[in-house]
Length: 365
Length: 68
Image 1 (cartoon, each protein chain N blue to C red):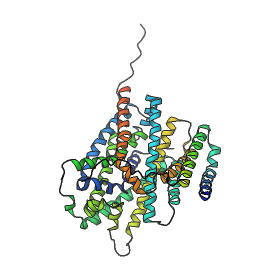
Image 2: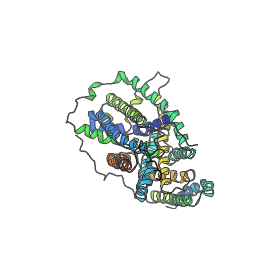
Image 3: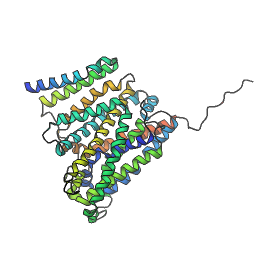
């Protein structure tokens, strides 16, 4: 049975936004938005909240159906065309995440192992997870995400003595220019939360639970961003590839745990794998809406191998992923926010209100 | 060049061998999807190995903001 609880859905949304984003995102946002980067996350959260509310209205009026199903049911061939666009789009997201994951593993753990071997191991794990169904992904999220969050808070607390609060100043040095840049890059991370209404129906999660997922993922993103900023400073953190990892390396817990960072990365990496697996599942879900006879378990290895090869071919290094991420918020605005919001709005108008009852048949005179 | 071709062929052959069991269980639309994706995988692998310079670094993408 492929049943997931509401709590698991909340955790999966959290993991999708939080995990892989932490690899390069803090450096990128701090490089451009400097000391005002922290303003971007809450502002972006408000914008995404509106989209989640719109999608929730549409799902509430169509019980038992997710947004992908509604697109196909209500818009026919146009909906299927949009879903094919989603397949292409999520293939590029997978390629980016695999590339970042592979480079991260190469830098931290296995510097001499070929990238294709590391990538194949990551992708094989994802394929097995997807073959097990959404339940396996949900259970892995339940297992690893809370531990990772606990360690994140623990590391942040250990870094408090090293924080320099002057790195946040001067506030709004160039007016609203830098906060606006912060919103642009925050969209890259937070906008992807709309995968929840696309994949799950109103029975699985309500607007309140979507808000919980969005709120906590934004809170933790803000937490890591501010820790990086106060620990390293935006000029330095902006020039590092993995500022969150560098901040963790500052933590020294006794002489025995000299390489404490390896423990953290060991817990971090499974959450990145979960995100890639969730993306693979989403891609197959889109394909199955277009071709309902498609067998998910059989098609997962082929799609996984395609994602791996595309990632190695499209991005020779992680820096190329960063170059793409500079303009990626435009795609996020269109496909993660614009299409679900517009689609949900139209679906809401086309569907009857949940309270509206069918008119009783008139008795013949 | 020859080594690259052999490497690409071995990689694709390994992937196909791994999916033989899936292939036998799959229905017709799934088989079509598998063939399409494996062909694209092989194409991307061969292009990336035989023509490593046929690749972009994405430096042509516009920087959306002038950072100051």
